[in-house]
Image 1 (cartoon, one colour):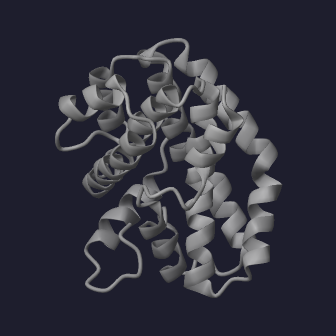
Image 2 (cartoon, rainbow, N blue to C red):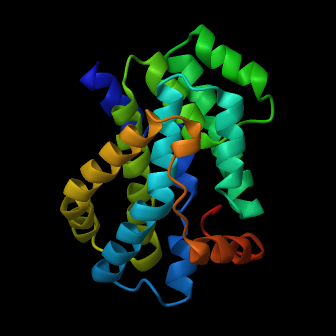
Length: 220
């Protein structure tokens, strides 16, 4: 396992398109549910234990080499919002482009051929982790960190939140991130049927509303 490869894959500057997405926090800010660092911490914790856990399980399963077609179907079943399914596939396409440039190989090429219109981002993330020599828990860590890191970064722009406060939120959540990644990795070893299916209905509802906004700062 390459620790440096894990850092590259988790780096927010990796050109995978995540910077254009708020992870649902833009809608939460507009609704008044996120107004400060304490609200952000609650939002991130909820997202981490629901969609974050689900994404981490899919990523870990892909890193283990489970069938991507089955994983794609599992991801669809766990993503009831059409807007979020479209976002997941768009981010998957963007990540796959960057991953094939960084870690070229047959597995990533095969994934691109199997899903010319893109598969869900966590599946690409896990396959990329495998191509980079990383393990399933590493992939899960990346997915969990993305689940909270994206909203935290977006909140800085949306609320003019102090970046130090936003970073402190992530630091305080770190032990829980480790726990969620470990749960996802263990579940992935049980097979596709045993993957987490935790959901956050409010995120699904607000994603559909956000997609219809005529003016927005973030794509999702």
